[in-house]
Image (cartoon, rainbow, N blue to C red; front, top):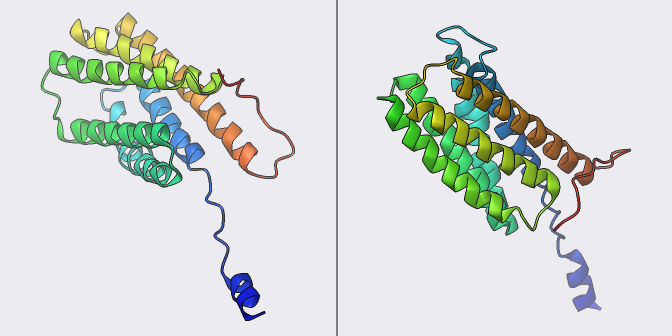
Length: 199
């Protein structure tokens, strides 16, 4: 009887929350704001500085935290993606704030590296759901267009850069949708959002 009582007194670990909606939301909002600048919707010469705070704290720190929680949850893909893009936003924030971008060519290679990484992450979504595939597919196109724009040495407001900006906005919207779907699925919502069947 004492043994049974001891077993019943052991605390039951509470289930961990899903960190993916937080990571996706931090990514979406920061991407949205920067993409509004890239698309030429904000045209002031210093408007890009509005992204610095978001890139440090929401796109950067919050995503890295989400990535660490994904490691704890055993989700290698989520951990790799959120931690990497969190680091990307921190790099962008410090580069914009401190003027660490020496030339269009240098920034182009930076963006090309992230294009390649995003292509690899897209391959990792192929056994996931359609919504997540949409996020990474659109992000790949966004990075590619922005890299091409920088390789051409094109100034802000060039057609390719503007198109890249609009693809970035689309990426952010799909990421927000995917985040909301995760929030609704994790709680007691009265409805859920479809994310497409797994491949």
